[in-house]
Image (tube, rainbow, N blue to C red):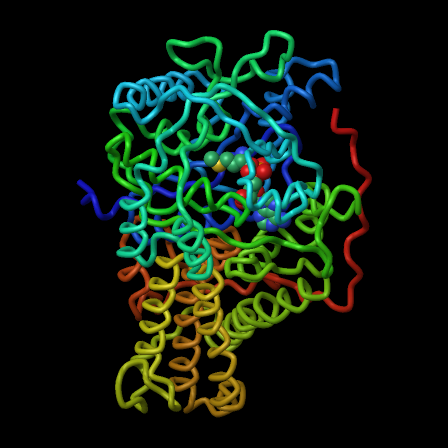
Amino acid sequence: MTEPQQRYYITTPIYYVNDRPHIGHCYTTLVADVAARFMRLSGRDVFLLTGTDEHAERVVEAAAERGLTPIQWADRNAGAFEDAFRLLGFSNDDFIRTTQKRHTEKVESYIRRLNDSGDVYLGDYQGWWDHTQEEYVPENTAREHDFKSPITGKPLERRQEKNYFFRLSAYQDRLLKHIESNPGFIRPESRRNEVLGRIRTGLQDVPVSRAVDPDDPKSGWGILMPGDESHRIYVWIDALFNYLSAVDTDDRRKYWPAQAHVIGKDILWFHAVIWPCMLMALGEKLPGCIYAHSFWIREGRKMSKSLGNFIDMPTLTAYIDRYGLDATRWFLATQGPMGATDADFAHAKFIEVYNADLANGLGNAASRVSNMIAKYFDGACPDPTRWHGSPSRGEHAGHDWPAIATSAVENAMTRFEALDIPGALEAAVALARRVDGYIHATEPFKLAKDPEKLPEVGAILYHAAEALRIASLLMWAAIPAKVEDLQRRFGCEFNPGAAPLRDLAAWGGLTPGAHIEKGDALFPRADGEEAPPEPARAETS
Ligand code: ME8
């Protein structure tokens, strides 16, 4: 039996199906995938959830433009998201769609509970509606932005409606207390401060429904309000519930509360304020962390449809075709906007990172080491204990390898736990880079000229190969296929999650005598290349 604290439930936003997936959706899901894979490697019982948000008014509009029903359009685009996520090798345990019965039935039951407790009530609402974002913008924000959408710049619409409201105001103090006493609840820190500042200006009750207008097909697309079919549940409320509905079954209940909701900065308010308060009202435990990353931009410019510079699936596919899936995952995972600033998808940076970390870092060190083992030891992993020149096992030329490796493992584990994916992967690749420095300092290729020094050469190559084995384990979550290839070449049986990471990564895992295969370069160098040509795009309908 796995202990409850060993469970790790991590989610991504569920994405709107009015349009096709792009780099942003892939990035957030990659972050969650890398974290989930690492946690599985560490022996945790992981559940990774992603999916699609389908009851948006925009879906009805986009479908109508193509002469389709909303569900036909949703099916098509949900399929596009699933294909994209398969292409990127994501290991999600489920893909929830808000049009599925398993979700809609749960949402009705949650709303009924909130109605019964008085946390949801019928009232009047007037406000500034942001059509593309499908949300009301608070009066002061609307004024600040000259009554235009703070996100899209399009004019806001004045709307008045009779609505069901959620009594958000009643939870202000409890929420503040929770955020203040759990510094890791909203991350990164700057986002937490933003949210705290805004909560302190006061929380107002929020609408959770929209009136159904028989003349407007958009208004009827969604889950009807239980007990009052003249309203349907507001898409954002419907969507947030997915995190709970997906695991609200006998066999999955154990996963709640989620350890982490990974989202983009654009949807922080819903996740850090409205969602926790709804959970409090339902008497559910709160998630461990809401992690709001920043945005990708491209070659220094914001991505937009009008500029035609969106990194969408055809562009990502061109990168995957040219540099490989793992290289693309590595770039996104290590250079992505996990902090408070946006990150630039620049081709030159892609090449620089690819060469530094993968071609020269892990790949070149692995080639050098396996080539020398082939040349001097017939491809059999040397036995380091045959050399008696080392003061202790694994210590040589100023490198205390067991200590270096252990500290890299601990460092990576701490950072993965904090969702510092770039920091964790840097700790891993830094270990691989040290191998190069060690070979440079000890020059086994020179020592090998003297047959008497072969035991020392063997020890050096063992240390180097073993450090690379451990470094690659720590990189596995980001570049699984290449690491599995490397482990196989090094004669290791690698079953992620079969043993706790600390055991898998303990110094001395390589077996002397095991066959070490030379093979082609894991990551061939990329030099002075142009970006892959912009692919021709298929029509979206
Ligand atoms: O907001 N860089 O869905 P959505 C990085 N359905 N990430 C980006 C990005 C960019 N340039 N652009 C988008 C919704 N994203 C709701 C969510 S959850 C209960 C409901 C990512 O399809 C980022 O994760 O508009 C952002 O939060 C998400 O896509 C928004 O996806």
